[in-house]
Image (cartoon, rainbow, N blue to C red; front, side):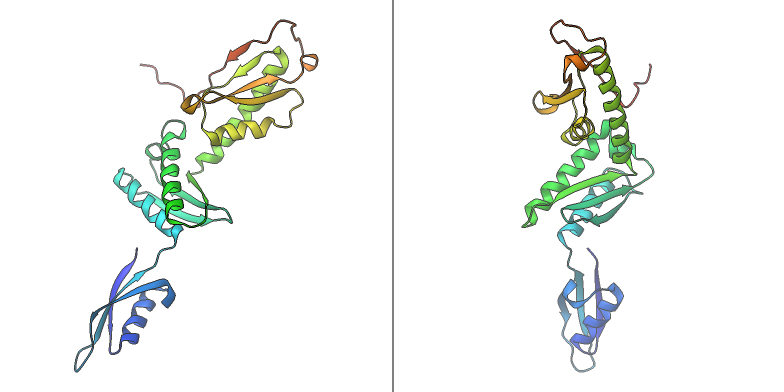
Length: 227
């Protein structure tokens, strides 16, 4: 929150001087009179910017990443009709994103809780860091296509690794119009995952007549380092 002190011969003059320095309008600030004017004495005021709910979230997140040690991190703010869009720009993205985006998801959840606790209307918070979400979406769509072809070829259902709701939605959407497979979420909590199953055995190449089997397919976006 931006706060400055200013003075003037009149109260309005002191406030106007502060508004010029802040570059804000009168309805965007709160004014506190620090010193009354009088004979040979100017008015002195403290003027603070009134933050919107989105700006409060931006400031909240900026403080968090600074305490995380991401000192060069800058939080950019954008908005759509139904969402607050936040983007973190920094050099060391690993500390902000975490393994498979877990840290980024946790920060997004905290921002969402704070926003909807203070705001009268519900809005989503979408948090990204240096284009990670877009890259991850591209990777998951490619994965969905590969799994579709695998299930089409073998006639055997494939179980993916556990994913968060955002990532599961990408897989479901990518395969919702498939002629060959269907998708379904199974499991509870952190173990919730997607199962990709053949839609119709007669449409599957090299299909077998045996009862359906499920392959546990584990996809990892990051290779484990060898010790």
